[in-house]
Image (cartoon, rainbow, N blue to C red; front, side, top):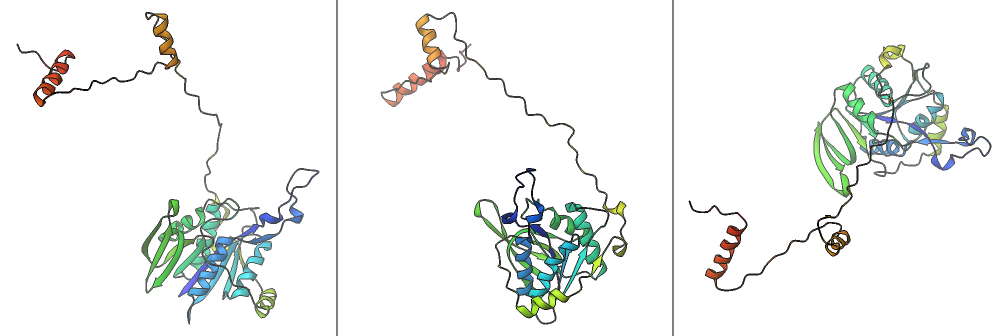
Length: 289
């Protein structure tokens, strides 16, 4: 079985600092890490790999993103690949998914693609769904655990308020793994040294059979943002035809009227007659012609 894992390089939140002079982020002190959810996906792929299976790690980013691919090689990934558009300083989820889908289709479609459910930097979780759309595969998001059985995968998903759901999906498929499902293993020194010396292959748009026009997606633009109009608040006005005492009671009760009832006591026949009289007095019963 061929497994592909999509990785992302993110700024480490613990190293983000503000320049006291400019008031902006001091990027010279910011370190970068592998997205925690993607690290879980990579560990689950390593646990799933059996004899004859292979794991390919892919990322979209500039040359600095080679670090996450070297981390994947150090823990046991068989091959890595970096994708990048030199004409873009950053990529949107649609562009990232388009590049990943093109690379996966060129190298022979894998049996399973694992992604992190969302990035640590306020990610929207769009990449797994868009990637599955470009590949024409089913996608399962918020995955907590899965078990591959022949050509199907048994999946456990996270739902709202701590609930869980179970189901299955036919391979090939894209699974978006939740962070915290597995801890990425530590890399041994031989693996780290080998990964440090490894050459990281890179593919650009021409290598993927794409052009800049293929990465132009319409984006929603906000012309104006206005707060909603407040609902008018109804002000209670007491009835001027009432006496001052009655108007004071209305003001104190804010105009709310309380329903009054009457308890009927007696024999069943007497209570039935009292109910009929009440209905007749209030116009609920038609008078006999």
